[in-house]
Image (cartoon, rainbow, N blue to C red; front, side):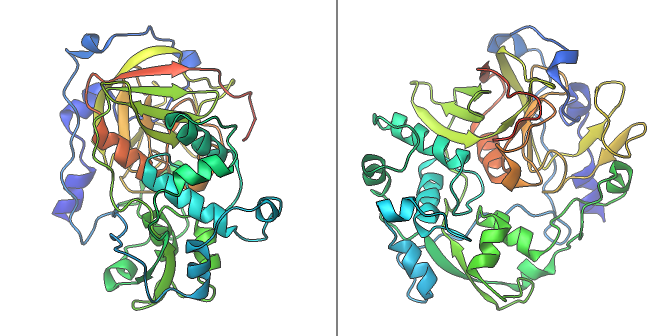
Amino acid sequence: MTGLSTLLRLTAAASVLGALAGCDDFKAHPQKSVTPAEVATVAPPVTLAATPASNAPVFVSPPVFAGSDPNLPPAGLAINQAVPSKAQLATKPATYDPVLIRAEVLLDRAGFSPGAIDGRDGENLHRALKAFATAHGLASTGALDATVWQALSQDAGPVMQTYQVSADDEAGPFIGAIPKDYRAMAKLPALGFTDPQQELAERFHMDPKLLAALNPGVDFGQAGAKLLVVAPRAAPRDFHAARLEVDKTNEQVRAYGADGKLLAVYPASVGSAERPAPSGVFAVVAVAPRPAYYYDPSRLTFTPQGAKGKLKIAPGPNNPVGSTWIALTVPTYGIHGAPDPVLIGKRQSHGCVRLTNWDAIELGKAVKKGVSVAFVGQDAPAGAKT
C-alpha cells in the first residue's frame, strides 16, 4: 500500500496553489487578466509520485500499429476502405458509419481531436473538420466534403486494427459503478476504471458503445479475446504549446506554437451562462498528472451530491477531474480530464474546461508554467447542450 499512499498524497505546492481543488464558477470569483510574467512568483508545477503498476489507475496509450492488419475481420476492412459518397452522407446509420469512423481516426492522428470516436455525426466532428480545414488553408463549414477529405486522407494508414486482451487488461482493479454521492466516492482508495470495457474504450479513444458494436458478444474481461478496435494516435504527440485559446462559443481548446502555428485542437465542455467561464487572458500555473480532487465548500460555490464538509477523492480516470489537472491563474479553476469522455462538448461544466482524459494528458505534456491562456467567445446558454 506504500505506493498507493504515495500516489494519493499531494505535494505541499499543490496545497498552496489549490491546484487540485474542484472546479468553481467564475461568476462568484471574478479575476483580472494577467500576463504570463505575473505568475513568476507562484509555486512551481505540481508533480506526483509514479503509480505502482499493481495498484495504479492506469492511463495507457494504444499500441503502435504498423501497416495493414492481415487478421482484420470484414467490418474492419470495410472501415479501412470507406470513402464518402452522397448516398452515405445522407443516411443515418443505426449503429455507426464506417466513413465517419475513418474520418474521426484520421482527425485524431492529425491533432484535431473529435473526442470519443463513435462513428456518428455530431458537433465535435464538425468542429474538428472545420479546424482541420482552416489549418490547411481550405474553406469549410465543418462538412466532410471532397476537398477536406482529400487533405485528410493523405494519411493513408489503416484506421482499424486487431487487439488481443491481455492478462494485465483484465486484472484491474476495477471499481464497478461509480457512486454519485461524493462522500461514498471519497471512501474509495482509487477511482479506477469501472470495468474492462471502459478501460479498453479509453485506451483506443473510443465510445464504449462503438467498441461493443464492433465486437458483438465479446467478453472484454477475458484474457486472450481478440478485438476489433480503431488505430488512433499511438501516444501523446510531442509538441510545445506557447499559448492556448479556450473558445467558449465553439467549445474547443486550441494550442499554438511560438510561431503562431496551430498545433492541436480539442473538443471541450466550457462553462455555461449559469456558471460562466472567465473572459480575458490568464496563464498556466501548474500541471498535475493523476490528480486528487478536493472539495472545499468554503472555496467553491456549488455542492455535489452528498458533499458535506471537506472531501478528498483519490486519483484515477473516474476522478471528477480525470487524468490531468492544468491549474490556471484563477483560484480553483483549470483545464482537466473527465470521467465520461462521450459527454465532452455535449454537457456543460461548473465553469472549468473539461477535455477527454487522453486529450488532457497530451495537453498537460505540452504546456508549462507561464503559458498564456486566452478565453474567447461566449458561454453556452444555461441548460443548453450541443
